Picture 1 (cartoon, each protein chain N blue to C red):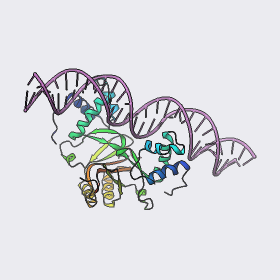
Picture 2: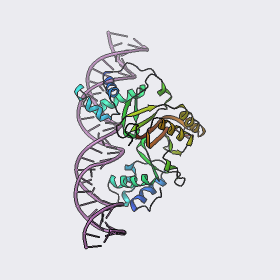
Picture 3: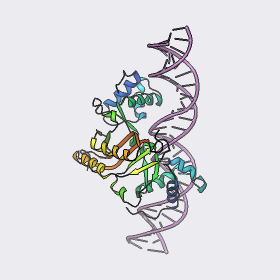
Picture 4: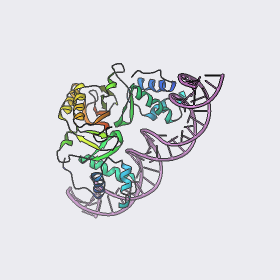
Amino acid sequence: MTTPMLTKNQSLVFDILTKAEAPLSAYTILDKLRDQGFRAPLQVYRALDKLLEYGVVHRLESINSFVACAHPNEDCHSHGLVAFAICESCGQVIEFHDHEVDHRLMDWLKSQKFKAEKSTIEIRGHCANCAA
Amino acid sequence: MTTPMLTKNQSLVFDILTKAEAPLSAYTILDKLRDQGFRAPLQVYRALDKLLEYGVVHRLESINSFVACAHPNEDCHSHGLVAFAICESCGQVIEFHDHEVDHRLMDWLKSQKFKAEKSTIEIRGHCANCAA
DNA sequence: ATCAATTGCGTTATGCTATAACGTGTGCGA
DNA sequence: TCGCACACGTTATAGCATAACGCAATTGAT
């Protein structure tokens, strides 16, 4: 999907996420944007919806937070299979793609005649820096 | 992990989940247990915490719901890598384990020196029956 | 036997996450 | 110029989850 010109609100949200070192919740984003005139959650959620649709932002289901896509130019989000390693100490997220895993999962789904639409692969634990 | 004797509340919650045809949210469970004396969300969440700890219930992060483990005797939950295919039409969930996927993910994590603790693999889409 | 620690339980209150429903303004093609 | 699509703003509400208090029962060491 080609990403259209972002609107003002979308740009503000996207910039915050791009600069962040860790995933942010919608309400954290809201707080960071109060100075730019944001007042209500919907302003954030509406921008996030579009950014998710464009594939430039990912939602981390297991922690109700959002991150900017780490590989926005690779078109990997188009096939949907993205995985995340989330450090529970420092909050850092490593985004990765593994075609082997993809194929294996897709094969299984196919064998079940299950039609996949969205996938979530999230591993929580501790990154190399934070591991005891 | 061996599952200790369940308390009254834990049993009530577990029974509801076992009988359910689809995952249930904590508040749905609460409503179903009002007749048995449940009054507050915490009664449900506390029971769920224990059932999750014992590995007899899974949490579906992407839909904020809970299901009874489909393979409680296989000890598969001990290695943590469980995947779910969730039908967005009928709500049915297929739980499965794929060692190939497991190993592949584990290898990647190892290469990053990332220490995994909890994993989430959830595919949303449409099951064979519901696919258009 | 008794005391302390642990665990489960109940209740109230609160906080965090997400969306419904309404109305406004703007741009653009028929 | 009319109608439509879309972004936006606001208020209110729904849905998910936990904090903090206190009580009762159990256990196990002294």
